[in-house]
Length: 210
Image (cartoon, rainbow, N blue to C red; front, top):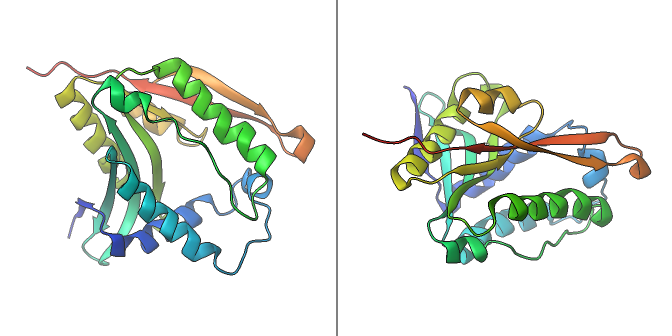
């Protein structure tokens, strides 16, 4: 069976969190942003956090790429659809970082990206791809691309741009899907024993539908 795009139920969220964990495992920033130790219930806390985010924010859309052969979610995306200036203006929320996180480093990274997004997009209506994670076991099968294409098609229907923060590894992938660089967000993690990190900030302009 082919991979298909489906909505994500609350029962699917533990698998989405598992994919997130697998996607970031071994990443260069993980020891800096999340050095630990973590409380025993940190896994359940993350599941509850992801579940609550959608319930509290009507702009949030969770999607999965589902593999019919294995019966498993193989990729997960968190989209925000800001159809109005009012919705975009309300998108900025205080950041909080739980136990096991380096709060100073997280504020530099996540807080800095949120500030830069606000400077670039302002309160203009747009779509925002906040998360895109693929199970490493299923990479290269087009699952992530299907979730990106869903948002691109939605953006074209609404006549809106799409914004995202790309990893260096994912940069060419997003370029192939029509995204262009608008800035490079740089964070110096040297005080934490880390690198000078660069994060491409990208926008896809809407296509004019005939």
